Image 1: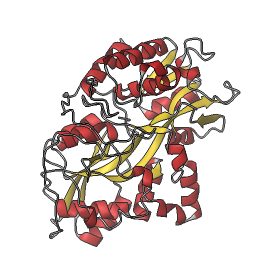
Image 2 (image 1 turned 135 degrees about the horizontal axis):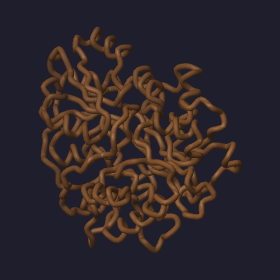
Image 3 (image 1 turned 90 degrees about the horizontal axis):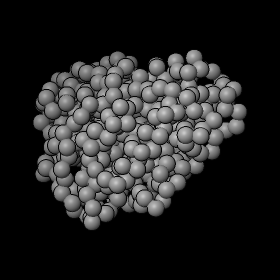
Length: 394
């Protein structure tokens, strides 16, 4: 999981997810959308709202729960917002398992862990009126938060992991990721790469296009042979990498200082660099990406305040404020029509451009059940990816 503006190290090892091998009904389109059929704890859905409990405890990424909108929520509902900022998905999972928090702004590389572990409950969307027609279709019913036809997440925002480059050095706009992966890249030694096990999926996306005989159809569904091929590619890239980044500030510094001239980035980081020479592109192979959602703890002490927050934070103005504060595409498309500034933000982050996001594979926790539909093999899980990433870094 990306480190949301905070400086933290790469992800640590996590418990293996062993899930049943039921055949999934998921589609295998580029975006990986659909409903995953797996054996998960049978947790009831809250049927109706009760009295507000007076507070709600939220684990969130930096910038997602700020005073500007949380104070207004408290005034409206009487629910005081207690925020705990987390820096990684691993930390979020660990905090949610303490039982001290009601809500979490989880990313796709944490969602399935929380669902499979029985840490979060399926949601009653009727209790969240702002989860309606204005939520962009590409963030509904996704494989990382919709299981067995049940929704476990309320979308917040999304973004792609794009190819950023210094146009003063890279004078022609790249069309392929090959300049970041192949050992004969003219920018060898100046390539920056992301530092986390989930980055293995980026290698898999590249292999899907350039080595189709491997049979990879979903970058988060890799059998042992496919994972080995991805690791080989990552080790090849390691020889041309200038540095790996997990701290966004370090990534910006690397580009600004000329240590790196090309590599994986987010749109918001290019924007924050505030230098017109830095450009970005979504290459022809597509890319990975991230999508965040509010998820409700199974043993939430304040479920009614939590439902109220999910609805409040899904309103166009508030969802848009969160998206602008962090730098991502908002989930509620109605925000884009609220002002010229909002429309400019939405255009910059491709908020309603589903054609753009069709080429993005959103982070999904790798599990032993192959989410590409295969039932004749066992896929590799997140623990195996973590071990593999350590072998890449050496």
